[in-house]
Length: 387
Image 1 (tube, rainbow, N blue to C red):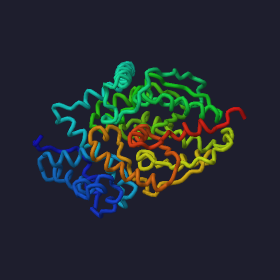
Image 2 (image 1 turned 120 degrees about the horizontal axis):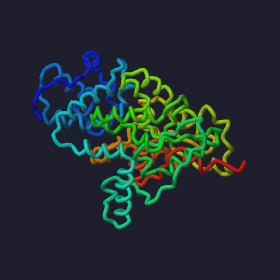
Image 3 (image 1 turned 180 degrees about the horizontal axis):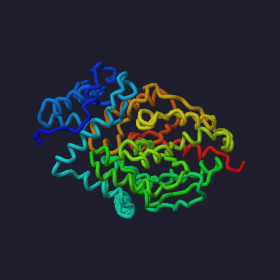
Image 4 (image 1 turned 45 degrees about the horizontal axis):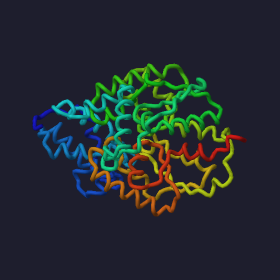
């Protein structure tokens, strides 16, 4: 892949980086490699060389781009407001157009077809029981053979259920639904009509596929009710549909999207009290990157958990855990090195359990032996529903 071409990045965005380096401590790949090519500043410099100076898209360029976790931790740290996320998305879209063979172009299409994903997941689950699937090496959780059906309880709010999370972690959706209902809301479910938000496709540069999934999701979640999301990565993309699609309908849709903890934090007084002994549990909150850096909505997680347990913050300033959607599968060595820094922070916290509001993070941390749960699974177990 050595042909020359523009990356399609807005020239003003590309020129906005002044190479000050304040982003460097917040970049997980720079932290573990110490290499400029693995930093936001280095990646932007490489983008400029290709787009402005006609440099070839060579293997060094591909490595620089493909090793980015796309955590966007550099964005809040940047005094110039460099939109690194959109620049990376444009770059990945151009690279996807140039790749002749890329399993992601086929693999991610499965996510938009729930029946196919469920069939594939059931096959994985059987393979795990027969010890035919190397789950630890592939970074897979234990996939359930059977799933309990979720049932609509009203139309006050939508609960976005998505693709992989619904196929592999539907029990989390069930816990979230019970907590939301305990706060007094009836929950509507989109079902297979909104099978995937398009996040993984977008990060892989599959623009057309991600837009098609966005349009389908918007049609499935019609009306004016709030759309609650219990996956940080999905919520970040849903909140940016207005930017990605550029239509008034998409802008209006994105305004309805809320992380479920945002919604609950404003209604915490409506939840039942905690069971006795709950405060004896110490929970460390791991902020998923797309909740902290993109949605800027990580504080409500602590607010919702605090009445039910003793909550402690990790001392790593929200550094990425290395999950990054499909990143842990694509870049396992870097993902593991990034995760080790998170594990050190968890050990220093002395917590009994870790709470993380993103399925990819929980799977990645659990594969390293961490006791980790979705925050609302913990609340669901602590709520005294009888009083």
